[in-house]
Image 1 (spheres, rainbow, N blue to C red):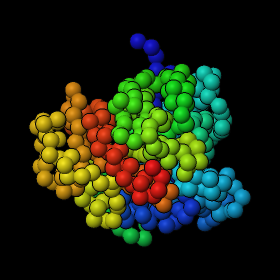
Image 2: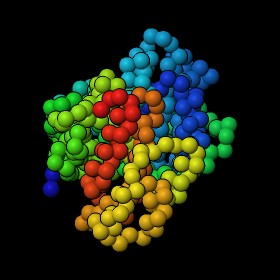
Image 3: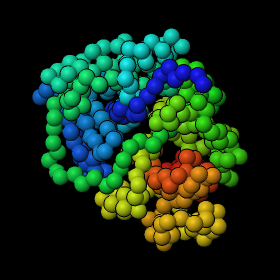
Length: 364
């Protein structure tokens, strides 16, 4: 068995560059049930940005906005809208992680650096991945603070009520036509990931559009990255629409795990989160396909939750509409009952649903 030269403990955090972090933080607290736990900005001695750290169980999302018109953060938001800048990976040894990946061809962005405050030390280093997205290695074994040095503890002004979001299940990247295999090879060669599953246009296609997808996973399976590219179809695929509006490759969606999707989605809907719609006829034969499940089908139908099964169990999933006016980043909510797969049986219904939204936007 080959040694895992890049052991990952999980996803440390996801940092998004956004136009208005203060308002976005309120959305994450009120609608998604995240707690505000830390902040960095002018009041903490940071002059060029404001960052809000939101947490729910093992999920940390950092929302960062620029305080200056000319800065890399402002440029990122101007080009992409609100989008994921950093997929940070939790490691035991950030220096070793940086050396192992850069020696295998990763492009360095930040050399290993030590950040310190009264709570201890954190070591961080960053490399490039697709588009302008970064992977930052975070070593925090000698740190007891709320997030990172430079951040101060901060509580929200509202009492955020968690909704059962547990951890990040996977993060999906969209890349240009012909680039999927290049980035799969990057994860295999540079980061030691393994190809987990491949979907081609026969798996993910409708009458009008298609895409291809490959899923890579690290050694312990804690970190999974599906990579999508467009495939030829009669009309514009959702991946092409994303690339047009994001102005290049980037993170398409973040899948978040729950162990009670009925409660989680009911709460999200009650708080105003919008989801893609799948017609009722989806449910007329779904049980023939997936067999026995523990949940009440009528409850799933009422909430429009999709069901799929693989050899190891079944899963329940649903997809939000884009988080902003640009049709780019969105969330998936997923509950796994043994299943290790990604809902292949739902692809057709799901992508027809996305196409209905594209048509409304005039982008199909």
